[in-house]
Length: 146
Figure (cartoon, rainbow, N blue to C red):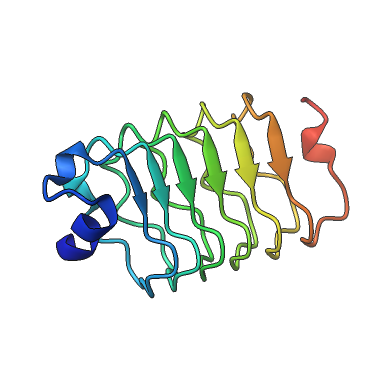
């Protein structure tokens, strides 16, 4: 809700917010973030989010933390062209499909999921850090072009 966002930002004017910490707020759905167009860092860790939505208006977002939720599919991130850090560790992901539009991505953390293939990394050619530990990977052939 807008009230939760105002509390997290410490300012009634959400257009000024550049960072929001919504860690452990029992959030089930990502809502109302269009009120924060200048957001650069967003922490939604330790919540109950199952679907990636409501993020497409955050065009200046550079860091997105979604550690420890119930997310099954990477989707709705293609508009985030400036995103350089994405943490989706400890979710329910089985695939990396959905990262195609993230050409500025430098840090990707997807540890502790059920990922069995790195197909889907696609054009994430700027990656400097990739954490895929504790998944179901048997080989890393998709990394051969790197």
